[in-house]
Image (cartoon, rainbow over all chains, first blue to last red; front, top):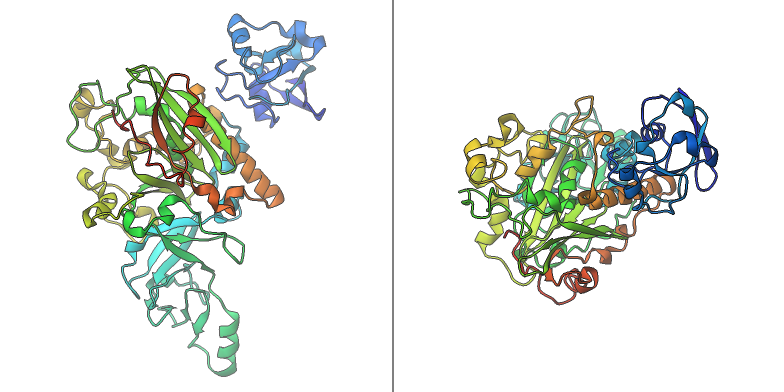
Length: 107
Length: 447
């Protein structure tokens, strides 16, 4: 299990204990975090599970693949340095304590 | 993809559920008027939104819908005697009129009878007949909302065909999503090749002018729901737009030739849906033969099974999931992409009736799906519905089209427009039932 903190655009904050081995998107949706639509169900074929990885975690989470980068161009909110599609981030033990921000909208 | 909670919120419609409560605040087309051919004819059992009713036409020809069970000791009023403006329970003779008033209570005498009769009511539901259907209001308000001014409800009734009705043994949201997803025409409803022979039954299969290039969808959200176009390139370089609507809480309007239409996915309960397709002509009275047409749509494909008094057996086609919908591999090899004729929504039912969740309920678990760009309207309608159902649950406020029935003056349309044209602006007249324009069907639905 890893602790992940989700910060909504209006600063509402929730911390969940999530299984490792699943995607950040899956964990967030199962845990009832709002603001992550994930239309394509994790196929990296839409940009509706966009999140901003907190600055301190960007390096540890890693950078998006070319496929993900292309898809991020379709994101509804600004793409920033910490932008990731949460379906493409696998939760690993070293991400315990991860903090991500959720954009105001996904489309 | 939807999370589990949102999926449940959209699918469950029984008494006390948020979606059930929202749907109860709209007029629901329940059964065809023709099921009640004359005054004092046999009552029918009906089930809507997980609730059982008895429906009957009284001596004055007025329609009534009551909770099925007699308030005395629960006998089914279905076996009641329909006579002298009321339904008399066959068990002990208690009698109720269409408004639920107890008009006789012969098991008591004197003051006891008077008091008891005055204090006992059968729960009754206002009924209204329009477009050859009996509509019921099941909501909380004393006064039902204004009747929806869909075009099929405002033209004279002799412009309207008998409804085409089909039972689906699955949740209401499953088949309706096909009306929001034009892309499945290119596959499920298609013939095998452009020059494939037409099957002897049903419509010739669909053949997209764009081949297998998927249509491009564009969605517009509105205060009645949403509409969208699916644009496919025609051989002359123009784009062929199919413009269809979704209206809260369970209606669609899809372009089908030059007819006006309304489709309703009536939830019988969480896993049964009655699909009611009303069609008509905006300009002229129909012949007797044309009127009968809608009700006979399944005749060429075996018609319906013999029904019981269980409403879930009404309008159940002979081709159904117990016999693979009469799937014919020869037809699949030579004529159609799927080996079942293109008759109303039967092919769609093959696709949606077996969708289920882990519990084996025929309620699809949308946490498992993967949506793409061809699902843009599906996504939009779910979001609109979720917003509406949450708002109604939390504040009691209903979508605007509940009261403002002028919002129902829309039409579906099929248009050929120049590539890249502003389809939304150019279809304004075609989308408006009051524009004076003919139904926009300048390119046939089935090419």
